[in-house]
Length: 432
Length: 142
Image (cartoon, rainbow over all chains, first blue to last red; front, side, top):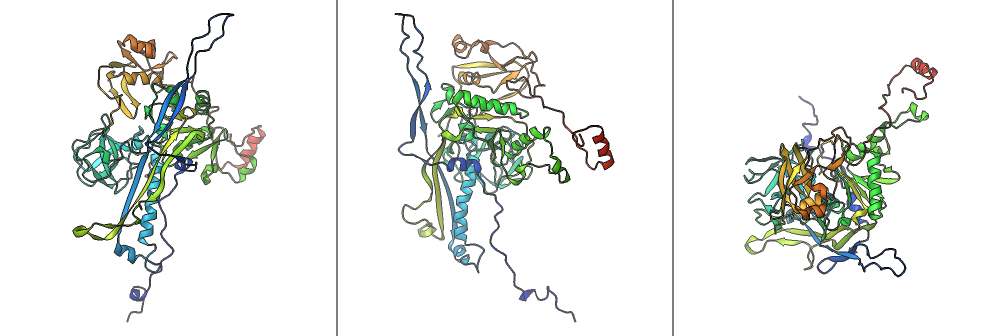
């Protein structure tokens, strides 16, 4: 006769569950917090409008005794118009799932709380990407004609030129579609659900064969409805303005909040393109130009972790180890434990959503976040949870909608600078 | 609603942009639009708005082997009005040779690292370390 072992007594063994749900999705949106930590500026009517002075009175000059006095000049102004941007998120659950998950004995966490709190966190994460964008909402560019298969090759993550990790901002289950860059028109019948994002970072898999009309360099953008026919039902050109547009010279946004940067170059930031190897000189040049052009005083430099490594590499040759450390050598810097590096005392901040090979030199004193709705569940009728369907379509479940209505602005873009095309070593890592 | 960039609009105010490097293989990004010069493509018809913008920014400034820092692109037969707006250099379509040895393409004479990379050997025998110290070296392993 065989004795008892754990297999034969498995029917009487309980299962021990430890603690709650482990959060594996990092929730760190540092650049976004730079804006959100500031006092919200009020918004109302049809948008925020304010004038900017963009030219001096040139009716000045030294004169001879009884000589001519310069002709009258005038100040030159332009008008800034900041539109509101509307972000919505929606979730739903069945009543069975809600009831079955109530109480610690029944579930690790109640479905209702998980879904509703999770939606807010997930919207915040998407805004972490948006804050680095240019308002167009480009997740990636199509790389080559994908034909009519289900695999789409992409590059330029977030719309920033680059061959590496094009699918960085694409996630499984996301509803996306394609936009023609030159016209802003929707590619017909092209909305797809992302079914997989391979780790190589160069492709994504669509749930069905993609439309033949999709072409090289088309924008991949979020889509708000299945079978979309109107580009207004996508996120294209509806996202809040991010740093790529705010700290820009027209490369990404030629007209920022109503002000044409060709007509009014003062509303441009200094952009040093194709930097190549990062150097202390080019960083200081950006800082100097921001001071000369706008009186800026850079207080934060923001970039991706890979760009910070390029910055650290810059100092490698010059680093020496103290004698006392030789018995316990440490090749790292305080960045290894999440500490903040500096350049001349200026905070060097990293953000996983930042574009590769780019640094933003920021004077944050003129950064503004205009807010109409800081964040709330739709509740005008007194009910956050809405029943699903009615009459013959009624279902025993609920849905909820969360909204954030705001926009970001930099009043003095010429106080900031941007370095593009910095040589970095990027490790392909997906952004969840 | 479609949003059409003024840089992409085809109209009467169009000019022929010339790649003075005569190589093509370049990309101008303006207002989020990509104007691609494929390898070997040295001319492209573009809008006046693009040219006015291009001559205000540093995006396509390049170093030549002659040590000049110039706009890579110029305009074939620009109108007097365009020349008056952006400057006479817009009409200079003379060929240039890019200096590809520059570390940066921006307006610096180049960036040199302060010293050559240092190799720090590991597991150096103590006797050898002493020998080095005796030789007057200040930095162990240097």
